[in-house]
Image 1 (cartoon, rainbow, N blue to C red):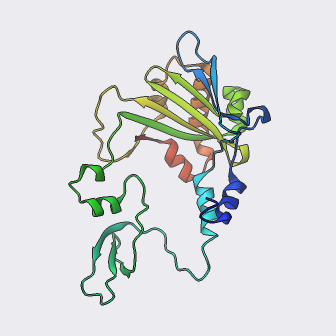
Image 2: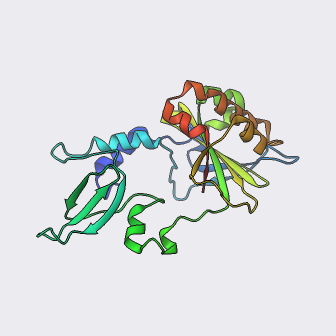
Image 3: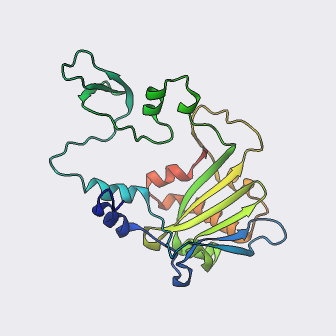
Length: 250
């Protein structure tokens, strides 16, 4: 980030969050048993190399910081969804034509395709029939959530202020602090056991019952985190509620 622009690093440093315990500053994740007779027990820690400190951050907060770095004389628009990019034969300057789903379009000198795993640009560049243009279901899906850190500690114990991974049969649960330690970010992964993803959407509604059923028998601390993450949903912004109430594919 510093090589691109030192101000990007500054923006990230303002919102990044590492393990809250100073003695854990060198740790990437503590690994614990998720289920079985030793559920909840500590297995090992994965230490960072060469003194590197792993940090987490709220993506939306980081993007807010990046937007502020855009020069005032640079025009920018959000909320656009790309439809197509084509060579514009009618443009005497040889520019590209970019069309959006809302019916608008613009002629541009260059297009930088940096639009994620569901990239429209990749499909346009490689062709819709190219297998490498498509994301492939890995056979895992996940539930995501965030929870107030005080409630997380009450439910899962003091160790959750640091980065944790619970590993068990057919799944794992990871968590790490964000927003300067005020919030715990949680992702619960499950193996689909060979079952295909049949939904048309990548993100589908789910329920508290479905989530807890997936992790029945797991460590009380892990279950406590999952329960409070769902119960806390009504006290979170709508954008966060949308993430907690879904199951998504990987």
